[in-house]
Image (cartoon, rainbow, N blue to C red):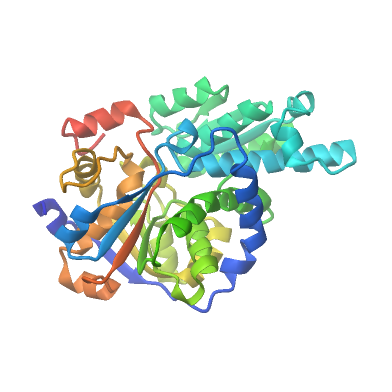
Length: 397
């Protein structure tokens, strides 16, 4: 394995996993069932591939590595297609039911029965790219106007992808967390509705629906695997993906649920710092990471409630090992199926590779020749220009 993984500075802090309540109360089994039932009825739904990286597993000395490739999801390139669009549908359902004085079904909205009414309901969100693309896609399908707020470092390719889906895109000079504040402020001023993947005090329903939507991915994994994984390495960000997957695995496998390892950029380690502090903690981002979708300084309170009980380990990784991991997958360097992945998708895989070069860290994480590792390949090539630059040898884009 390349020297860059052997010398990469990974930092570890232990979580405080406890008998899980939040995995069943914050996100209930019924929340997951409702989301799966709806999303699996959408036109174009297909389960995404669970790719076996057997060659890499052999090289790393683990029993198996399974990589859930979310690149093909609804043609949008990322797992976010499951969350933002479903949450948008649920916001429209609540608002239309209140306006029309009767319970409006998701099917009615999905089938276009209320497009004129939906056209009067503006949905907004801040994004690093993929969540906004999902929201824009959902709004286009359901007939609602969409405004997306992006920060200075979001690539123009990702911005254009959202415009192509009909979104009005507003770029600010600040970072992701500042774009969240602006989206909230302008929504309050104009009577718009925020559809965010992060929660805060008094704002929980859309983020819960976003995380419920992600459960489709977890259900597909559990129904495909013959044996429970021993470990799952999950990208950080605000924590929504990680919390949803951790809760879904706990609900399915109960006491046999895998060890949850959270992986973040060392440049945006809000969950790592939260674990160290024992409470949700904001991280001051001074420099943007190559993993654009994980550049988040403030954790979702709802997600943290789950992760504080479920996560056994928190890791940070340097940007230096991200591009080599993208190339490793895309070039089939280990003899495995070729996977074209985005920068944020490979965080967990990069961490596993680097951790296996460090015997002490492997022992800390309980990684050995019997380990069955699950990874969430959260995005495909969502920005072709960045992917091409990485494949041409660039390690920073």
